[in-house]
Image 1 (cartoon, rainbow, N blue to C red):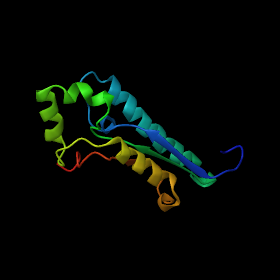
Image 2: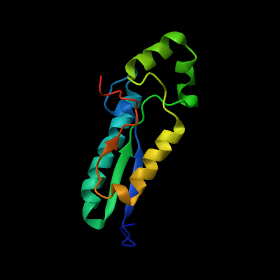
Image 3: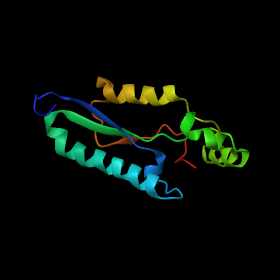
Length: 122
């Protein structure tokens, strides 16, 4: 994009774990790194017309959360942390990406959006 002098949008995939430490550490640390990479690239590329943002999903109904959903105690823990009381759907993450890629988000750069059912409001 820079070499071709083309404006555009870069969307990185992080997680709520970028802001919430989880046991084991490596996942949270790697997702926090994605968030910081997003912020640094946004700063460095802002004058080129390239926007850089991230999506940090909460608990989404995917194979990754299958082990949580399949264990009643862990399922209740996840739902208890999520004020909407439900898992997100993959389509909701796709809609977030479409927004960030669109002209409607032209003033967004260096941000992380959290489609996470209110996880950070409680």
